[in-house]
Length: 620
Image (cartoon, rainbow, N blue to C red; front, side, top):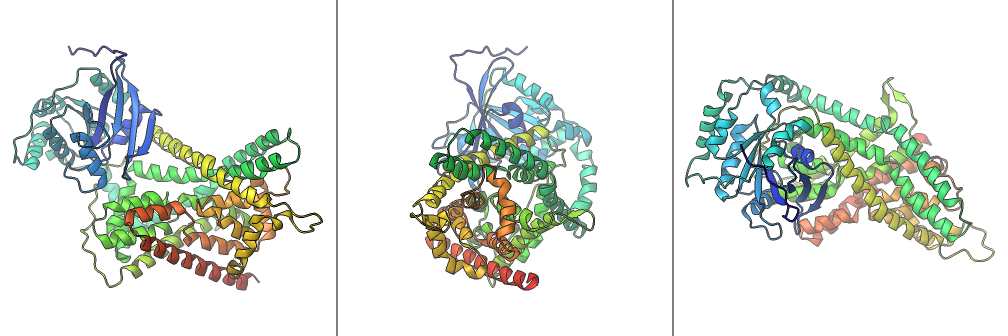
């Protein structure tokens, strides 16, 4: 019987690293083992995400677990694989070499994943193999001789089901045993593909299986050249419909809570600067943005669920043809898809594109993809100016307008890329994707993913957005109007002066001076524009929540043409200095950044101008 490790409080925690191919269930396993005890950051000097968590085994052994980026080989072809290779081999400049490597292997794709495991055996480190997705293997009739495979590899092999809490019990027990010795290296020059084929033929019945029949049946529909894109369009359509339908009750509850909190905080304070700062700077600024958190989380919920279900890579395969229409290869799809969450990781993900021209064009059009920071602006204006009614008895008109904004942004990105690549051919190879098995999304993983995004959003509200709104409050409050002044107090402030100076430039597109003021702090982060409007309009308002007042206030003071022009502006304008800064770092060219800002602002102004005057002509 194996000895159990005796926990010693003085002993340093074991440093273990999770490695494996993409789609092996490594992240789900990491979430099961560490739960909320995770820290997420970036590796110094690169844009690769670093995730570390802590766990204690049933025997009391403390472990620091590092979730390394997915890799297909130690012969790195991307920054992600560079990090994985350097950490595993002990060549990373900052990250210490792990005491134990835990290689996660998908039981349903041994032909691909065992090859990477054999590469790891060459580096001379203790390795433990986790044979994941054993439930999927059982479902398709795949049997694996686990003891025989472990004996042939000379490594401990632990079966697991990462989507179940009980599915990691054997792994936790194995971690309580003494660490395995480094495996014997495979003879130099050995054919790894032949070695893998021999292992599969000897210890599994994979060669006699007819494949995953359920996946084959689903793929006949989801990957069909006609029905596949139709299904994808329907999925995206309902995704944007639910952003409004599901979020509204939660938004109403949040709005009521912010109103109540504001009344509690403000009631003891007399009228004066402190009360104005809290009401118009902090509460109006943060509260107006926090109320949109449910819609942002619902959007992320869809993205996470589609990714965990195995559908997202299939969507990438379908849209590879559309990328060809833009003059790009399919490798541009993943960075552009990431840009729908935020353009910053999308631009950074373009590093995986080897062709310099395709990489640059992808970076230039990434800001056109509708990031989640635009959502507060869109939903505020749609709620204020688009009637809450159904079309055809089932579709919400507000959801249709939101879908149209996303659709226009995508089409604009394709057209822009086509113009940029016109007359120039790409030498990128065709897109190759590993299609993972279809799986039911794990509720624990979804909850953890949403929690991490909520924390990131709220930390952004608590730092950037509140700070900028306090600054805007100061600009809107000082200097005070002179004695005997008859106009509005804000007209005499620095913010009012700046807004009136900008007005001649933006009046042709229908913007008033309040919108001009909100565009300035909105350069730091797009969603700040909403709280900036609340800060400007909350001056002299009652003690009720500024978020509650802002929607009817805008619908009363703005024309529909102005609102639609501002929506068109935000489809294109690069209202995010962070995005431009990352673009500068990735391209190492200030000229590219200036050119990108110029073409995006030019598109925004032209779109707002045309939208404003077209809406005026249609509505009178």
